[in-house]
Every structure is written in structure tokens, then in C-alpha cells.
Amino acid sequence: MIGDRLVCLGVESTAHTFGVALADEAGRILSDVRDVYIPPPGRGIHPREAAEHHGRCASKVLREALDKAGLRMDQVDVVAYSRGPGLGPPLRVGATLARSLAAFYGKPLVPVHHAIGHIEIGALTTGARDPLVILVSGGHTALAAFAGGRWRIFGETEDITLGNLLDMFAREAGLPPPGGVSVEKMAEKGRRLIDLPYTVKGNDVVYSGLLTAAVQRHRGGTRLSDLCFSLQEVAFAMLTEASERCLAHIGKGELLLTGGVAANRRLQGMLRSIAEEHGARFHVVDGRYSSDCGAQIAWTGILAYKAGLTIPLEESHVRSRWRLDEVDVPWR
Amino acid sequence: MKLIRKGAEADLYLHEWHGLQAIIKRRVRKKYRHRSLDLRIRRYRTVHEAQMIHEARKAGVPTPIVYEVDKDHFTIVMEYIPGMRVKELLESMDGEERRNLSHRIGGLIARLHKRNIIHGDLTTSNLIMAEPIRRNPEAGGEGMLFLIDFGLSYFSMELEDRGVDLHLLKRALNSSHFRVAGECYSHVISGYSEAIGEEYASKVLGKVEEIERRGRYALRSTP
Image (cartoon, rainbow over all chains, first blue to last red; front, side, top):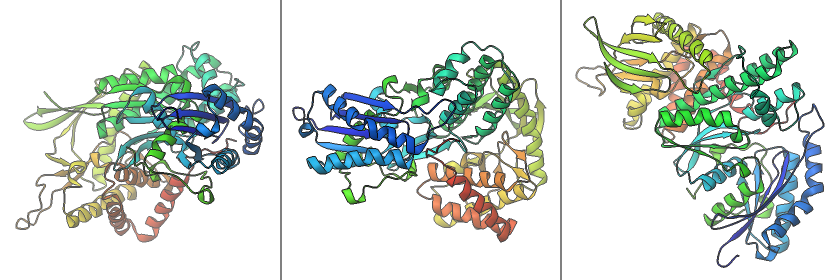
């Protein structure tokens, strides 16, 4: 407690990032510390290596998060953890830490769905109330809106996520991680639009064909800056088209862009344009919390705990596959 | 010309065309899209949609009749179908009406698929129940069910593409009509199976499941 306000400690570990954050009931993020596993050049994430990384940095990240918030464990009221979806081995490291803290200090344990964390931190930092959510990250590319107690999926990727697309292309082109940032920087120097496949199916997008074509063009010697420029133009336009179709279908008055790729300026610009077109307010998650972080878990942990959601230790196993639209959200 | 709907990619106007009530569908410029990409997409979809509407009619699926296509102005002039979108009707119908309607929707999709046509954007917004909307026992007639919006349609022999079509409709039901989605979908499937054959339908449904399992909402390690 700080004064009479609940404090939640949140642990995030679905993929590359190991994060611990503290948040209070008033929606203040008191600290948000993370350490990111970076795979060797040219390689993707290896689940076991990510888990080993998380294990090594866990106690340091935890201590720093408490210190920065100026709190001791006995001032924490709730422990929340990212239960899934994500990679099993790294997820289990975070869950183990959260369980140990909850058991040792006698605190309630709260499971959080990682994607709902992205949505709630987006809503907290922008004031969005009932938006069409565009969730774009390494793990998700989904268009969702709230109805009947759950987030309903209106559109999504049918193969790889937008984050995957950018990461995999960057790796192939020898650009440093994080791939999305490298591609964005390189795209600024691009001018020429290269012909790449544009595939929208209803409100869904399909990115694997686009990746293959872009990689082939790269191997064929097409200028990298033009290719990055074109990849962004095509991939983002596809998602924006799907989003606009959703917006026209469900008629929400707000658009919320959240998740790691939300920081991309060009994507923001495209989505802002459709929001204006349909008279909807456009929100982008605070850049400090767009990527995976403890803050999204700590804040969602507060919301879930206040709605009465806790989990007994013996049932707290992680769920590496866990659909967003399976989760009841009683606090909305 | 009266603007009757601003859709996601096109504006729809109600207009008279040689004495007939017609819809003018104009694909508008999307400012977010790179200019040359935007032109390419609009031109292609305008011509393509008109062709696919024609193909769907040949397959026995009620669609509006195309009167005129102007690819330089990204415009299709077509028959106006007075009626209501299934989106607005589905949840207010009584149970039996809804089950019947779902069954008929499945039958329409099967007709397309038998002719290798994939609609590409099956939602309850793209189905129109023509007037009379209310079933009138004395007249014995039900409204005719029209399928519209063929801008994303294409020909395919693949099971996968048929699976995607059903998956899109199932998802549209689950998200927009979650109170009645399960019941509607199972009747869509029964109508589909009846028209296309049980054995073939079960293969397509296998694909739907596969598409749903395919790493959606879940991280996976990238190769």
C-alpha cells in the first residue's frame, strides 16, 4: 500500500523481455525495469536461451524495480504475472518468480493475459475508453473490440505477425535488432515503390507471401532502402485497410494502437488518417510501454485483482497458447 | 446522386440509371496508401469485382446485376437491391427464422465454392435479405438472399481457400453476433454440407480448424 492505494508487482516474460514493474491503484507506474535477450546476429529467439537469460537477470531486475519505486516487498499487495500466450520456457521463469514471491510474502497471485496487458496499458496511457484496438507486436497482429464481457477478434493475421515480418526481413537483410526500428530507419531513405504482393482477406492480413517476395528482391540486389520503404508501405497499408473495414463494420468512435510496432511513425500516420476519415479519435500507447514490459502486467494485475481475479499456486501453470477471446474481462 | 453509405473502401450512391434504380459504387482514394499502390488496387478491384459478380450469378448466387463499369473512375453501376443487411436482422429474428437463414447462407457459399469461387470477405454486412423482409405465411415467400461485395473474390481450386472463406464468416459471427454465433454457424455448416456433400464439407471444416490453430494470438519461435 501507498497511503490507501493498492500496489501491484507485475512480471513479464513471454518472449525476449524480462520485465518487472510496480504500479498503483491510481494508475501510476512507479517503476518499470527490463532486460532484453538479444539472440546472436542472424538468428531468431531460442526459447531455452531466452529462459536462461531471464533466469540470470531476474533477481537484478526485481531488485532494481523495487529500488526505483522506493518500495519493499511488504508494501506490495498483489503479485501479477504474464501467464501467456508466449514461449513456454521463458514464461515459466516469470511464473516461477511470481509464485515464489506470492508464496514467501503471502500475497495474492494474479494471472494476466499478455495481450490484454498491451490493451490496458494502452488505455491507461491514452484515456481510450471503448476503442477498436489494433494490437501489433512480435506475438500478435489482431483487431479487437470489447463486447459482451470479452475482447472479440474482428481481424487478425492468418500467418505471421507484423512484428515477425519486420524482424525476419531485417535479419535476412543483416539489419540489427530490433528489426522494426531498423526497417523504419532504413525506409526513410527509400523513394521508389517496389511491386510487392498485397493480400487482404476480409479483415485479415497475410504476410508470408510479402516476406518471401521482399527477401527474394533483396537477394536479387534491389536497393535496401527502397525495399524497406516498400515493405512498410505495403504491410501497413494492408493492416490499415483491414482496420478501416472493421471500423466501418462495428462503428467505434476510438482507435487504439498498441504493442511493440505501435511506435512506428508511418503506421501511426496511416491509422490516424482512417480515424479522421471515420470521425474516430486516434490513440497511440505511450512509447515507454509499447514494447513488452512489466508495467502492462502490473497495471492489468491491479484491474484484475480489484475484479476479484486471483489464482491458487497449484493452478498457476502457464498457457503458451491462450486466445485473447477466451478470457473473461469482468472489470470492463 | 444521393450518398447512402460510406463503406471502408467505397462510397455508395443511389442514382437513376436509364430509368432504373441503381447503386453507384465508387472506390475512393485512400490517402494512407502510396499513390501508385492505391491506383493499382482500385483499378484492379473495380474491374475484378464486376467480373466476379457476373461469375457468381452464373453459379446461381443472387447478386446485383452489373450495369456499367468505368475503370478510369473506379466505378461500378449496379442494380439496387431494396432490403436489409443480415447484420441488422440476425439477432432480432426468431430462432427458427434465424436457423433457416443460416442454412440458406451455407447453401449460397457452397454454390460459389462448387464453381471454384472464393468470396473473400464473408460477413453479415455483405449479405442482403431483399424485401419482403418479414416472412409472410400467406404469400409463402421469403426474402431473396443476395451476396454482395466481391472486391476480394477470386478463383481457386484449393481446399485452404474454401476454409478461409468459412473461417472469415465464423469469425464475423463470433465477434459481431456472439449471442447467436454457435447456433448460426452450425446451421451455416449444415446448409453448406447439404449442398456440397458431407465428405467434401468435412475436409473444408478440417481446414477451418487448421487455420484457427495456426499460431493465432500466440508467439512462436521464428525459424
